[in-house]
Image (cartoon, rainbow, N blue to C red):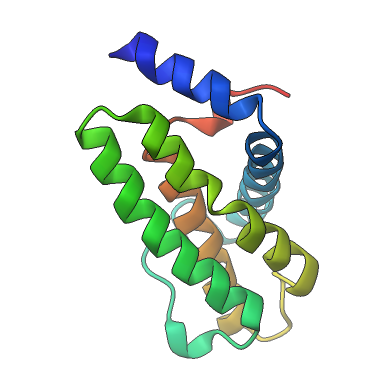
Length: 137
Protein backbone atom coordinates (compact mmCIF):
# COMPACT_ATOMS: atom_id res chain seq x y z
CA UNK A 1 0.00 0.00 0.00
CA UNK A 2 2.81 2.44 0.84
CA UNK A 3 4.52 1.73 -2.47
CA UNK A 4 1.29 2.42 -4.39
CA UNK A 5 0.80 5.68 -2.48
CA UNK A 6 4.36 6.81 -3.21
CA UNK A 7 4.02 5.88 -6.89
CA UNK A 8 0.75 7.83 -7.20
CA UNK A 9 2.31 10.82 -5.46
CA UNK A 10 5.38 10.70 -7.72
CA UNK A 11 3.24 10.52 -10.86
CA UNK A 12 1.12 13.43 -9.62
CA UNK A 13 4.14 15.59 -8.82
CA UNK A 14 5.49 15.00 -12.32
CA UNK A 15 2.47 16.82 -13.78
CA UNK A 16 2.07 20.59 -14.14
CA UNK A 17 -0.91 20.46 -11.76
CA UNK A 18 1.20 18.59 -9.22
CA UNK A 19 4.12 21.00 -9.45
CA UNK A 20 1.87 24.04 -9.22
CA UNK A 21 -0.14 22.64 -6.33
CA UNK A 22 3.05 21.75 -4.45
CA UNK A 23 4.22 25.35 -4.89
CA UNK A 24 0.86 26.60 -3.59
CA UNK A 25 1.04 24.21 -0.64
CA UNK A 26 4.54 25.40 0.22
CA UNK A 27 3.44 29.03 0.02
CA UNK A 28 0.49 28.35 2.33
CA UNK A 29 2.65 26.34 4.73
CA UNK A 30 5.31 29.08 4.85
CA UNK A 31 2.72 31.76 5.57
CA UNK A 32 1.14 29.61 8.28
CA UNK A 33 4.51 28.83 9.84
CA UNK A 34 5.44 32.53 9.99
CA UNK A 35 2.08 33.59 11.40
CA UNK A 36 2.03 30.72 13.93
CA UNK A 37 5.32 32.08 15.29
CA UNK A 38 3.49 35.34 16.02
CA UNK A 39 0.14 33.96 17.15
CA UNK A 40 1.19 30.62 18.65
CA UNK A 41 0.96 27.01 17.58
CA UNK A 42 -2.59 25.97 16.78
CA UNK A 43 -3.79 29.56 16.43
CA UNK A 44 -5.43 28.75 13.10
CA UNK A 45 -6.91 25.37 13.96
CA UNK A 46 -10.63 25.05 13.54
CA UNK A 47 -12.98 25.77 10.69
CA UNK A 48 -12.97 29.19 9.08
CA UNK A 49 -16.18 31.26 9.16
CA UNK A 50 -17.92 31.54 5.77
CA UNK A 51 -19.51 34.88 6.71
CA UNK A 52 -16.04 36.46 6.94
CA UNK A 53 -15.11 35.59 3.36
CA UNK A 54 -15.33 38.59 1.08
CA UNK A 55 -13.30 37.79 -2.02
CA UNK A 56 -14.61 35.54 -4.76
CA UNK A 57 -11.32 33.62 -4.68
CA UNK A 58 -11.88 32.83 -0.98
CA UNK A 59 -15.25 31.29 -1.78
CA UNK A 60 -13.78 29.25 -4.62
CA UNK A 61 -10.95 27.97 -2.46
CA UNK A 62 -13.24 27.13 0.46
CA UNK A 63 -15.54 25.14 -1.79
CA UNK A 64 -12.65 23.36 -3.51
CA UNK A 65 -10.98 22.49 -0.19
CA UNK A 66 -14.21 21.06 1.19
CA UNK A 67 -14.79 18.94 -1.91
CA UNK A 68 -11.16 17.81 -2.21
CA UNK A 69 -11.01 16.86 1.46
CA UNK A 70 -14.08 14.65 1.23
CA UNK A 71 -13.11 13.02 -2.05
CA UNK A 72 -9.45 12.50 -1.18
CA UNK A 73 -10.32 10.93 2.18
CA UNK A 74 -12.80 8.59 0.51
CA UNK A 75 -10.27 7.55 -2.13
CA UNK A 76 -7.52 7.01 0.46
CA UNK A 77 -9.92 4.87 2.51
CA UNK A 78 -10.48 2.76 -0.63
CA UNK A 79 -6.71 2.74 -1.30
CA UNK A 80 -7.25 4.46 -4.67
CA UNK A 81 -4.31 6.83 -4.40
CA UNK A 82 -4.38 7.95 -8.02
CA UNK A 83 -7.97 9.12 -7.56
CA UNK A 84 -6.96 10.85 -4.32
CA UNK A 85 -4.28 12.76 -6.24
CA UNK A 86 -6.82 13.69 -8.91
CA UNK A 87 -9.09 15.04 -6.17
CA UNK A 88 -6.23 17.23 -4.93
CA UNK A 89 -5.38 18.36 -8.46
CA UNK A 90 -8.70 20.20 -8.57
CA UNK A 91 -7.28 22.56 -5.95
CA UNK A 92 -4.71 24.02 -8.34
CA UNK A 93 -6.80 26.76 -9.95
CA UNK A 94 -8.52 27.89 -6.70
CA UNK A 95 -5.16 28.00 -4.87
CA UNK A 96 -3.59 30.02 -7.69
CA UNK A 97 -6.55 32.43 -7.75
CA UNK A 98 -6.48 32.83 -3.97
CA UNK A 99 -2.83 33.83 -3.93
CA UNK A 100 -3.33 36.15 -6.90
CA UNK A 101 -6.45 37.93 -5.63
CA UNK A 102 -6.37 37.78 -1.83
CA UNK A 103 -4.19 39.50 0.76
CA UNK A 104 -3.90 36.96 3.54
CA UNK A 105 -2.67 39.38 6.21
CA UNK A 106 -5.66 41.70 6.01
CA UNK A 107 -5.72 44.74 8.30
CA UNK A 108 -8.90 43.39 9.92
CA UNK A 109 -7.66 40.79 12.45
CA UNK A 110 -10.82 38.68 12.11
CA UNK A 111 -10.47 38.49 8.32
CA UNK A 112 -6.75 37.73 8.67
CA UNK A 113 -7.41 34.87 11.09
CA UNK A 114 -10.19 33.54 8.89
CA UNK A 115 -7.95 33.49 5.83
CA UNK A 116 -5.22 31.74 7.78
CA UNK A 117 -7.74 29.17 8.99
CA UNK A 118 -8.73 28.57 5.37
CA UNK A 119 -5.06 28.03 4.46
CA UNK A 120 -4.78 25.63 7.39
CA UNK A 121 -7.75 23.71 5.99
CA UNK A 122 -5.93 23.54 2.64
CA UNK A 123 -2.82 22.17 4.34
CA UNK A 124 -4.93 19.59 6.19
CA UNK A 125 -6.72 18.56 3.00
CA UNK A 126 -3.42 17.84 1.32
CA UNK A 127 -2.14 15.94 4.33
CA UNK A 128 -5.10 13.60 3.90
CA UNK A 129 -3.12 12.04 1.07
CA UNK A 130 0.52 12.73 1.92
CA UNK A 131 2.71 14.94 4.09
CA UNK A 132 3.63 17.48 1.43
CA UNK A 133 5.94 19.26 3.90
CA UNK A 134 8.42 16.38 3.43
CA UNK A 135 8.67 16.89 -0.33
CA UNK A 136 11.59 18.90 -1.63
CA UNK A 137 11.48 20.84 -4.83
